[in-house]
Image (cartoon, rainbow, N blue to C red):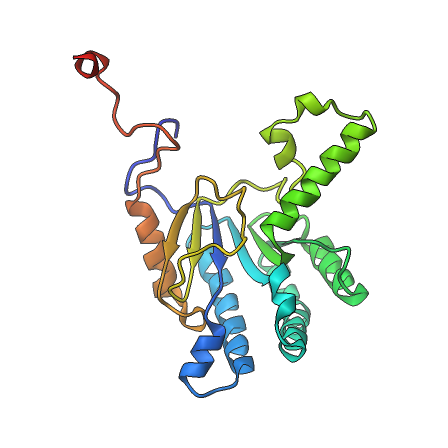
Amino acid sequence: MSAGQRAGQANPGHVAIIMDGNGRWAQMRGLPRQEGHRRGLEALRGAVRNAGELGVKILTLYSFSTENWRRPATEVSFLLGLLKRFVEKDLGQLHAAGVRVRVIGGRDDLAADIRRLVEHAETVTRDNTRMTLVVAFNYGSRDEIVRAARQLATDAAAGRIDAAAIDEAMLASRLDTADLPDPELVIRTSGETRISNFLLWQAAYAEFVFTPVLWPDFDRAAFEEALAEYGRRERRFGGLSEPVDRAAGAA
């Protein structure tokens, strides 16, 4: 739609989720943080399934940020183990369901076994078209933009591009998400109201829904409520919802 999208619009084609609240979920129940992360993985599986059933074509999940490496080594190791188990256990089901897996984030400093796992998941599912699951792993939006700018600077210095010709489209083409449309809806669970270095460029015109639901409790009903809230929004992209009466305005 050009000028704006009306309330009651269809579900967004691309939804991104900041999955937050695993630790608090566990703490509230007197459980170790690892149990919160285990339950969070179950919620992730449910979100992928629900997204497909609700007509979402692209689901991007913020699974592990560049800042998460600062957590205790035991927790980082546990989270990496969950990632491995998820790929090993779920990749076959995702592939059979027609889900394409994409992983965004820096890869150069990842351990070799993690890189192989990521590349394997992408290779096996690359021709699937029913839905795309984007996993933001070792991802930070500022880092992504810096890497894109560095590529442009290198190409300009080598004479492959004209520095004066660099525009938004050219920078966007160097981002990890170059082959993906921007998200229309970003959801953050757990009641926090910040985006924590997630898709800063891509979410410029996204709608944001902040829900108090902790991630392990983010079920079908919570997903549907977030989509319903999106449907009540009016997306104007900097324009106006109604034509301007210029004569009246001048008067």
